[in-house]
Image 1 (cartoon, rainbow, N blue to C red):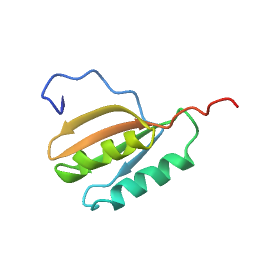
Image 2 (tube, rainbow, N blue to C red):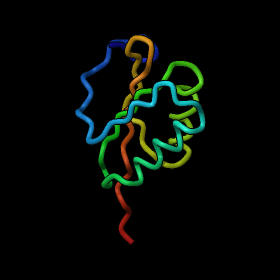
Image 3 (cartoon, one colour):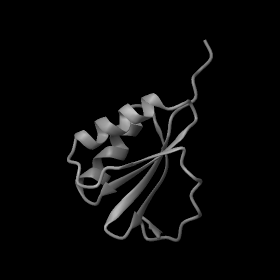
Image 4 (cartoon, one colour):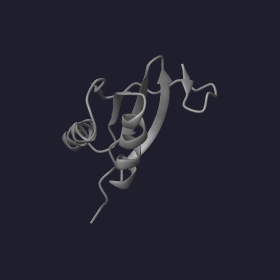
Length: 92
């Protein structure tokens, strides 16, 4: 497995939840990812499998814009593995 830029990658932490969204078109893959993250505990890690091309270009950027932290984004053959963390709640 290698990162998007082709560099060797460190082992990824085990995810708390995972979604296989290969074959799911944009923007449905982003919506499903966001809905899953909203169900998870703060600080939990979600692993999402996305097709190469538009999904891997759009979903991580959209998640960042929504305030989610992208942990890793790596190529695995003909798809990408995205790990995204639900943010911790801020104390009021």
